[in-house]
Amino acid sequence: METERMTACRIAEAVNRAEVSAYRLVEKILDRCNHLNANLNLFVSIAGSEALEQANKVDGMVKNGRSLPLAGVPVVVKDDFCYSAKPTTYGSPAFKNFSSPFNAAAVDKLLDAGAVIIGKTNLDGMSMGSTTAFSPNGPTRNPWDVNLVAGSAGAAAVVSEPGLIALESDSGGALRQGASHCGVLGLRPSIGRVSRYGLNVFSSSFGQAGIIASAATDLSVVLKVISGFDYRDASTALCNSTADQVADITKPEQITIGWPENLIDNLDSDQHNIFGQALENIQVKGFKLAKLSISYFPEALRAYHVIACAEASSNLSRYDGVRFGQAALAENLEELYFKSRRLTFGPEARRRSIFGTFLLSKGNFDLYYRQALKVWKLVRQEFSAVLDQCDLLLLPVVKNLPYPVAEQVDFLELYEGDLFCAPVSLAGLPAVSIPAGKADHLPLGLQLVGPPFSDELLIEAASRIMTNMTMPPGVS
Amino acid sequence: MISIKKIEEDMDKAIDVIKIEITPDEKKQLAVNLKEYLQWLEPLLNVDTSGLVEMINSHGAVNVLRDDKAQGGDRHLLQQAASDFDEGFYQVPPVIE
Image 1 (spheres, chains in turn green, red):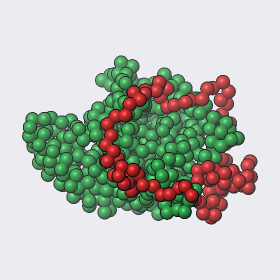
Image 2 (cartoon, rainbow over the protein chains, first blue to last red):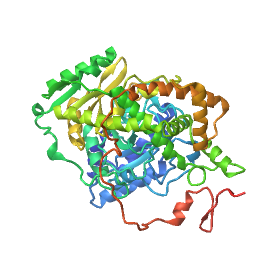
Image 3 (spheres, each protein chain N blue to C red):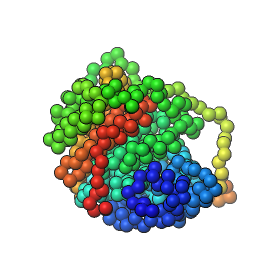
Image 4 (cartoon, helix red, strand yellow):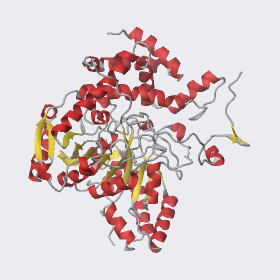
């Protein structure tokens, strides 16, 4: 059976029917991933023998009559999730030999469902960034243009091999922006849907586990597998959805998608055109449109960065070389702390740690941090009021197209790149980045945002309005 | 606007709190970055937040606590993650002079 370009759901179906052997499929995917890795720098590590062993196990279970929702589905996992079979480097040279003794909750659920972990994907140091330019392993290249960054190695892997699923993390928008840059779907689920146990996050309030896939049906099945209450993560919700509170996707004429005219007017011409085409497409598909106005995006972006920096400075303090992190050679305790943190933190982690500590210091706490917490509240109220006027909200994802890999981008320009994603994270809402078109030769996405626990509605709506992309020319 | 000298002084205090080695050149660059960052944050300070109560967490849910009992855990397996251990004890660099 020809397995190229099969979606993850189709792979699971074929493996469950024993039309395809998971072992043979994984063998092929591993070959392909090794080849892609040489060109795109996708992986921190590839799980060769471990993946084949897991695939063999899946074939055995299928032979014994088991049917698994993700039988033989190849999954790549961002290297901030713990996976005991491979080191978890978290994008820091200090963790290059760290092997977690346990799996992240989402990883365990994927394995239980029959998925096969192919490898751990590249990431910015300590997941701080949306480009992979801050990775100690070098940036991941964009399959659409290898001279540009991919934004997310998981997204680059999925667009190059459509049957793959990527387990990714998203704080200020890395997952959604990477999906936009590569032309695939990226879901940041509702807070509380997916356990963060075993996921290293620098920001406790905003770090989330999410999914990247090439087909909406794949997103839907994987979300069902990895979501659910987890006693080890106090932020997981006891309920999985509030289906009775969200609109019925079978009646698009009863679903209103709002769009903020005040934000769209400021987009560049390519983004503006693609947004306009998406609005036309939404109407053609039978949805209603509502023109809205949303305030506080620039302020929300800044509030996000103040809170995220403050949380980073607090969360990273444990990497002192004694309790966590690699111990540097030192002659006394003070020196041990100073040198070990130097060894563990990359340039962006150093910057955020210092900025965060500055913002939390006496005199600055009320001025910046407390103000950011109040703006957080204001933004939540603003989004809540907007979602009272519509069922879903259509927003841009990225401010800029992907940067050239060799370009040294100013840190504030990178922070500004989160303009459309960070406010959604601050509002605590689920969002899905959907391929919407191409600007020049590069894909460009838009995001649909919904009320808490409207994830399934978001995925269904995305499937109806997304633009099907071809494979990038260099990898097809 | 806060002066670069004051920023450098405050940053020194922050570095001392964090306890991280920063080179002199890097410190100069970070002070410039911090000044730019504080200017960038100005629109945040101009938002009228009177009457608003701060958000405390991202989901507004009540904390869920498990029983205060040790669960599972494999001491030997956990110690494999440490750089050095001996007879059940973690080996750490000498810290008491």
